[in-house]
Amino acid sequence: MAPQTRREAEADNSPIATPVSSASSARSSGKRPGKYHLGAYFDPADPTAEAFRVLAARTRRSHQDLLAEAISELVAKYDADRQFGRA
Image 1: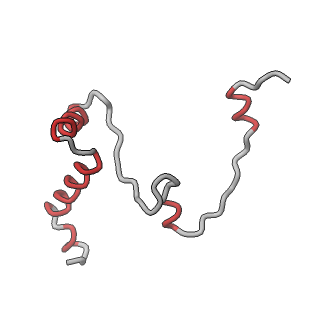
Image 2: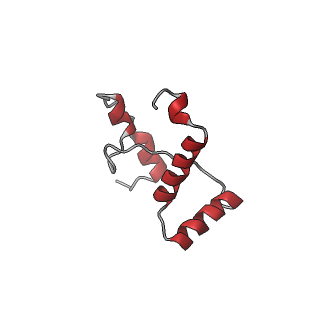
Image 3: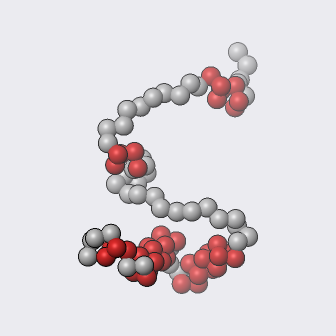
């Protein structure tokens, strides 16, 4: 039997439905259970993306840490907690 090409192998695999027990498990990946992914995609040449990478490198902080700080400041700027009745 000749080895299959990647396309042939993918064509042979039919999707398997797996039940989802709750909304939280749908948001959780296998690698980071209980965590919620929050991110965006940028063109690598975008000046904002480049500045973010440089800032992370120069401050020796993780992208996750910088994003958490930025989101906290954004929420504070728009006073989101009060506007959504959480304060």
